Picture: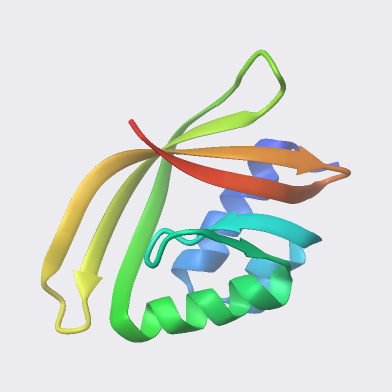
Length: 116
């Protein structure tokens, strides 16, 4: 049985490959997701699909998990190296961020982005 770390690693791989179907398959149907580009929150797989489609038409993000740990409440904390390029390939951000996940019944239930 895959671990939560395996689940998240696969989700990062799918995101970076722009494989929306594979990334959404590991999310709860009512996933609560941050809108890091426009602000606010996205709810549900369809909302995340629409958000990523808009995002990828404007920027080219790549996220590489570097470290996984679990906090005292059971949330998974991932140190992520994030590189964002504009559509011409120019780097507009190269930084470390924290992604905080709640995994429920083997699916991503929510995620938040924090500064590292």
